[in-house]
Structure formats: structure tokens, C-alpha cells
Length: 465
Image (cartoon, rainbow, N blue to C red; front, side, top):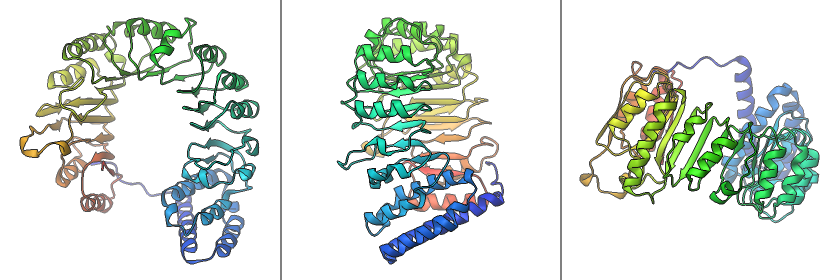
């Protein structure tokens, strides 16, 4: 049985009550009242409610409110009502303000300057053709900026001049971002992650980026051609490397040499080479391998042999291990675990906290991983594609998992009774608090949630439909 819910603090209860009042009032007025009533009410609440909250609570309140608007904006009378509701946070010094999600599309770009103390600006949802002139925004406190597909070199030059605290920038698929725009970020000395995947940046531009930004921690979506053109200068700050393309032995050697301090390695593509070179990554704690459907059976067998050899050397250091195929809807594709492989991982990786695998055996028994917190087993086919009477239905059982907190049951045919028994099994799952990706009807989910509330359990069930 999971932990019991603890009583909320008086401060949190008060904030929740204020939030519910503001949300319900805005929703009701937008449906039943006039635009003038909504505008006047927003002005009153800003003065008498929002401005009186402690400064350190306003950003969280704003984030929750924006999230509510993003999920339920269709309930408003018209889009102009949403624009009026955004006035609640305009012209206020909100430390830690985040502006993201679908609500961004309702912002008049000319009012960008009225969003003060922004730390996160996500323009990915912008769909209108109005220019998002970044000069209109207050950017001095910005730490995270996202603007996929439509960002330009001019936008990056504005960011480079005005964002000394910037740490994360994602502008993938922006064809008008070139080496020139990337170079303009050189003044952002605290950058940790830059995503220019599918932009018009050359290999020379990427190599310069890696040499200039000494605090970069993460490099993702590295293509085969890019790996071929990476220079050999060492980048000690990179701790997360990811590629979705095929990887050769030469590439592996270059990755290990150029990025010696990688702690998390993510390779999703065709992998046919010997993986033993990876053991030279002394700080590696996370390994995420997903294999191409185009690999032949003999390649897959050889790959598993390589993985076994690698785990024999580095397994004790791993806290995260994810193994699977690029598509789990077809039986027998990629690395599909049998009981022998699960047991081998149990014996070589005693410190795993996160484990993901694919299987299609009739029965898999998960051993008692002492430190495991997140478990994501997956069936290697989708029940929707086959009649149940012709399937040898995969089943999964569990030994005691004393520290498990999150369990995914993706593609498993589980009943309400089964989920309830797992939720209430305090012997096997004393710390379990989330079951996700289940395939249950709404009525069953509500019944399980009712039981959790009745027993005062801190438990969440997330449907996979």
C-alpha cells in the first residue's frame, strides 16, 4: 500500500482555494457574462488578490492558471475572452514567470513587454502570421527559450544580446537559423543545451558551438553525417549524448574520446558494432538503446551478446537501463527480453533505479530489484491488431520491489481487479504511487480513484488510451 496523503499546509490550502475561486469565476463569467464584466473583474482580482499573494507564490499560481487555460480554453465564449483573461498577469513583477503552451498563441506580440521577469518563453505554439518581434519582450531574466520551425538568425541575435542568464535554447527545424545566428549566442556564457536539429547550421558551426560554450551539458539528435564531421577536440562538460541515426565503430570511438564524461548515452538506430568501447565511459550511469526494425535476426543476436559483455563491465554503475526496438507493435522485433535476459540484468545491474524492456514470452517474472524506482515493461505487440483467441498473451509477475514508485503497464491487458490488487499490495509495492499506461474504461478508473481517496492513499492512475 502506498504512502498515506499528508495534510496540506495551511498556506497551500489557502492558495488552492484562491486558485479555485479565480478559475471558476473566470470560467463562469466568460460563458455567462459580457466582455466588459470579465475585463472589470480581472482588474479587481489583480489588484485585490494576485498583488496580495507572497511574491514567491505568484509564479506558481500563474503557471497553474496558464495550464488551466491551455486545457480548457475551448470552454470560453470566444478567443477575445482568453486574451482578456491573460491581463491577470500583465504589468506585474512576477519572479520566475513562465509563458508557454497554447496560451502563447493568444498573446498580442506588441504586448510582450508587459510580461515582466520572464524566465521561460516558449513560442512553439504560435500559429498566427504576426511577427513575434523579440525586442518587445523583457528578456534579461530568461533562462529557457523555445521557438521551433520559425526562429531566425535575427531572433537569435536579439536573444544573444539580451539574455545573459540563458541556459536552454530549442529552435529545431528552423531553416532560417544558420551558423551566423548560432555564433550570436556566444555572449550567453551559461548555456547548457542548444537544440538546432534540422536547422541550416553547418558542421563547422556545430564544432564552433562545442568549442565556445564550455558549459554545454547535452547534445541531442546527432545525425550520422554530423558524427562524421565532429572534430577531435575534447568536450569535458557534455554529460548527455543522443543520436537517432546509425552508429559505426568509428563513431563510437569518436563519441567516447570527444565526450569522456558522458553519464547518459542514448542511441536509437541501427547498431551493429561492438559496444565494448563504451566501458571506457567511466561516469556512465544511464544507457538507452533502441534498435532498428531493419536489423536481421543474426545482427540482433550478436547485439545482445555485445550488450551482455558490456553489462558485465559497467552494469554495477548503471542506474538507468532502457532496451527495446523502435516499434513495439510487431512481435519478435528488436531486442525482446526472455526470462534469462531479465535474470542476467538483475545479476549484473544491482543498482538500477529505472528499467525499461520489451518482452513477448508468455510469462516474465520481474526479480526483486532492491533500488528500482521506475519500471516500464512493454509487450512486443498491440492487442488491438490481433483477435485474443489466437494470441499467447504475455503475462508479467513481480517479486518484491521495495522502492518502486512508478509502474507502467503499456500494452498489457489488465483488469480493474488487477490494478486494485497492485495498488493495495503493501508487501510487494510499499512505495508505489503511480500506475500509468493502463487500458481501463473510465468507470473503472473512477472506481480505483475512489478507493484511493477513501483509504487516503497518495496514488495516481493514468490511463493509456
